[in-house]
Image 1 (cartoon, one colour):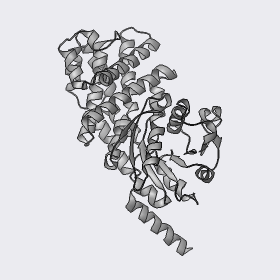
Image 2 (cartoon, one colour):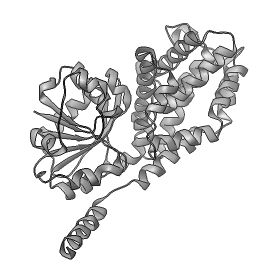
Image 3 (cartoon, helix red, strand yellow):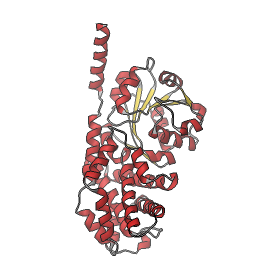
Image 4 (tube, rainbow, N blue to C red):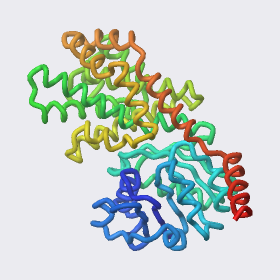
Length: 374
């Protein structure tokens, strides 16, 4: 099948990289559109850049990889959309909204940037009347760039905070840990690598053992042999910070009625993939965080709330008190409430960006009225 990306920013680049690296598609099977200069990755891979309509005409499956605020403009500019399969990649935009405006089949996804390394965590749900073979093919595409979690559509706004925006939380954690290690005398480059490995280790512990982060925190608290927790010799207070973040993220998911085990897997995969981004790309956690914060988007709202609540200072203090005993790190972090308010801020912004079937009908009626007036 032919694939098109409308938009070729950071998220589209991440998905494209996973798609090509997995061998799921070849460059000649893909077209893309771009409002400005396409990313270097698209150019290096020889992806043909065309107009939005040309991309839709070319493709069987169209990834709408623009900001949600740009969806109306993009769809309004398309003359031929009937029968096409559209895959949304934006918070708040429902399958019914896009289906009503395009008369196409719609699948909704919420991927994240670690897809670039094949380590993404993508939430997905299907719209009405999408045949199994089409849904399974899109599922396979998404699996080409990481782990995939099938949700109901009413859970998708919460998944924005749990999987889509959450690499920023991991990058902020790595930033904070690395500053602590620098304060302790470690060179900056080594501090960043150590911090990323700490977070990756915490995530791998959850994913490989099948234990909950709370159970693993208990293993640290009750001083079970360290080698049973991780094969890498890393500071246990840092590992505890990573486990606490996974625990708080998964608690948020469960509160939003996402299966608790699924929420734990999503949170752990997000941390693993984000840490791998730091380790493999050579970019600083700060730069990676900035990349995922679109102006007016969901992620930047979470980041603002983390900063407002003093996330970095809390982590540094937790590491400091836990230098001699990681149990003190756990005790310190249990006294503060930072992660849930930040994820709530992210979800609120996703709801503000929401576009549903009623909004689509209103938009159609407005366009008809405008046409008659002319």
